[in-house]
Image (cartoon, rainbow, N blue to C red; front, side):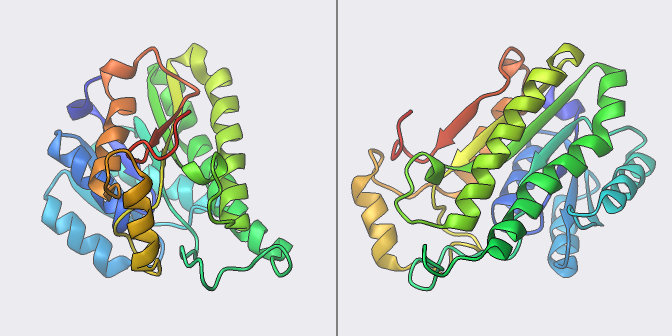
Length: 253
């Protein structure tokens, strides 16, 4: 299925990387659901900017009922079911290396909060769309990961652990859903310049990344968003269970 035929759900789609992903898909002709939890004004403003192919819908990814209702409303509005899921939402996290909790202070509740967003959220949205994808024999599921679980230059214990678990879920889903022509892949960025979550990052850290990255620049949300398009496109139809690192070559795997 071509991108311009797809109905795409972007969780956490009102700002930062999510907004860049929504813009990329609309640019390529897709219809897009901008999912938000609290950022109502920003989500609706983005939907207005993107025009009739975009719709802002509220829903907490941690709630199975919310996600089922969101998929139902999206189908009622666009007259077709969701074909493509981008799991991007991030729950209450800042890339603040100066004020993060370290090995002595991190608590299980911190880790649990990130697991709830990354893994429980993924499970809820995948299950909400799965029956329709199976029936239509087409589905594209793309999770957003991080290069930090390959090279934890900063020990964000809660965030990185949750994203590593999300990669495991991504690959398990890829294995099980492949017979239905549903692919499941991950796109992992590094620190992006700039999103709401990376605003807390110091200029010194960004300069260090620039100096040690082969492309000599920090990856932008727009660059990562365009890489997400590949996994939704016909060109990736034989690719599933993969993790594509998009960070200018900082991590090579």
